[in-house]
Length: 202
Image (cartoon, rainbow, N blue to C red; front, side, top):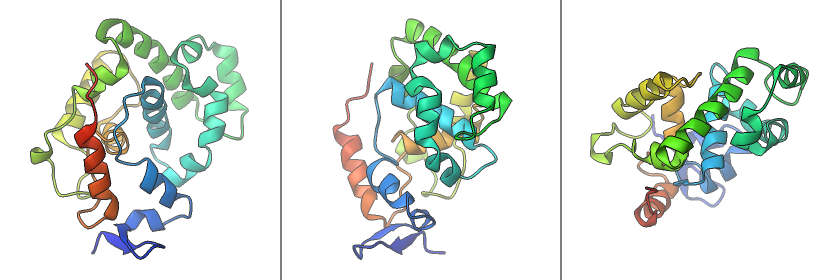
């Protein structure tokens, strides 16, 4: 099946972005474009973990609620959350009320602080796991890659939770470590241009 569909401007885009009205802006402005901001990287990995078993539409619709609930995904603030915060979040109908995933975000914030101390930044760590584009499968044909498997394994070794290879690969796609826009998608070239001028964090 063709992986593109005509967008509202007549140009081809990844077929998935037509599945919901809110997907178009996310597809055109965010998905696949490189990110070096630690807070955005942490937020996205957390949201991908919440998506596990659910649809991205569910998470995207609640994204602003998640940001409020988790203090803008400020690592230091979330790392200080207590059991009282878990109880509060379990009553928050604006987010996904899953104890394991909520506790994983708090745990991962603590692990993220350790990583920043050890690696300098989350961005520096994650971008060291950028796959060689030549080794990747055709866009949107796989849900993991060897690099996402390796990154997932290393994160788990460091104590992170809810970071399986599929979750990590979705994170890599979204944050521009992988340009997985369909070959005919108008945004593929835009994402590639952004990746070409992007300064990889050290």
